Length: 267
Ligand SMILES: [Zn+2]
Image (cartoon, rainbow, N blue to C red; front, side, top):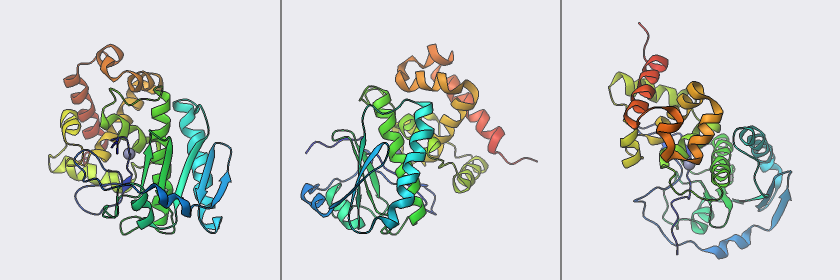
């Protein structure tokens, strides 16, 4: 089985030191996906931009449908409309979702992913969010995975040359995951002098609460340079110096400075 790192994860409300993630990155132990599990998804619903497949009563999914159309409207303005409708598979039970994607022994925080090879978002239902997420978190997760799909297609259907932190940062920022919980983690890291450098995020995303900090880097780029430069950067991350006029070290410093000014404890 081809294992694609693009399986994106989601976000998470862990209360621990690491923020949460919902997707497995490099180093994750992969199980075997069982494609036959998809047979449980007997219902379908088409909205303006999505084809949903699910099981059982769709009443519990109404908010999810509209949340994803809302994300489409918001993010397509920043990036670009998708070239085609997107399929979304919603598994009625987190164990079935795991069975279909990363294997039965997957961690409970793994609740959704975008699979670029098959161009499909898979997730567990808000009705079965597992031990670490609330039903409401699943709406945010859906928007997060959708942003991964949009980023992928914006780049012409490839993640080649796209740093994990940039892919995740865009997903975090545009799905509204820099919420109060995340801001609290940033303030704590600043107070304890534990803010990672961008290069550290690239090397070991999960150890450094990569989701949260990646989101603040994209927040910084968007605020300081605007959407046009951000789009250029997403398209050509290697062109960073040309696009921003800053070396990697200078960009890192500029972001850290802004982070301290925006989130640091004011006297
Ligand atoms: Zn992600």
